[in-house]
Image (cartoon, rainbow, N blue to C red; front, top):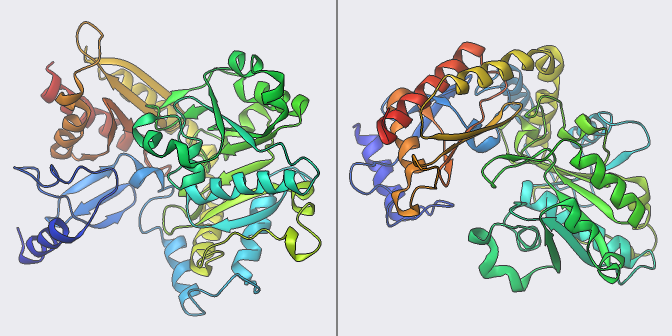
Length: 430
């Protein structure tokens, strides 16, 4: 190990606090902290020069690969102008251009306004607060409740975490958030008491597939069914496309596959191609107009880096790459490569493979099809073993996530699946 790497590891151990990480185990024993120092395309490089396929797109963010020349060039060009200016009371060209480009991805007269923030949690937070304030300013003060789906995940800020349905992340904070009713199905939603429905401001869902719920797709037609229910009940629909947006499911946005337009659309992660923190909440002219008038109707919510010019420049360049490289047209071959590669693993420990576009969850179980004991941490062990075979990814419990960058060549995806198969065999047996 180089002197630099040793120093970085020491400083990390003593001073950094990593998210979703038990630091009593971080770097313990032979499991040295992984220090990533470089990348190109779908590959990452650590401090020792080892290469890894970026199997979860750097936590579901990277779209076109690392060091893409178009996005690199856009960021460098923007640095020659200015990196950041306040969006409170002042605009900037990149934010205006990006808002226009995002709105133009939807039918005219639908989603017309863009509110910028920092990440997926804040995009959802903005949507939730907009939904409440809209009702307050539209003579519907009692409509303050929300419905979310069991085992959903919408971020970690207090309002967004109120919507979450995974107790491990949210239960200790449940009493501090918004009033939320969790349902498991459309049947449960329809069975809610009338007085509860009448008090609802909005329903929120991850379209097509739940992420943190071990990558579980929804039944076909669920989204369109939910849109119809919301329309009938005068309830806003919030779509959390933080994970599913920008090509992950095979279309630019998951909601396109069921011809659904939400009242609020939350975007982040892949918005900048995985380069910089930036989020956007899109909504309708009808919602926006409810905030016009005197100062009391203003939406008092925002962030220091709202509309950040570097982030917007990266996002604009990412949209250019979608057009220039015909990314969406090239996705079917990559989706097929992922499907075939996972099917070829053939290990009896693979209980189920759940795939939606270039999103996949590979659930591992024991021979009797029961879950492994939690303390065995099989999923984490498989991911650790996969490093030796050139694959970097993470698990949710014992479900291995494989979500390659959209730029990945079919043969790279096949190689990643082979690496995963070898890691499963090493930990679980042949």
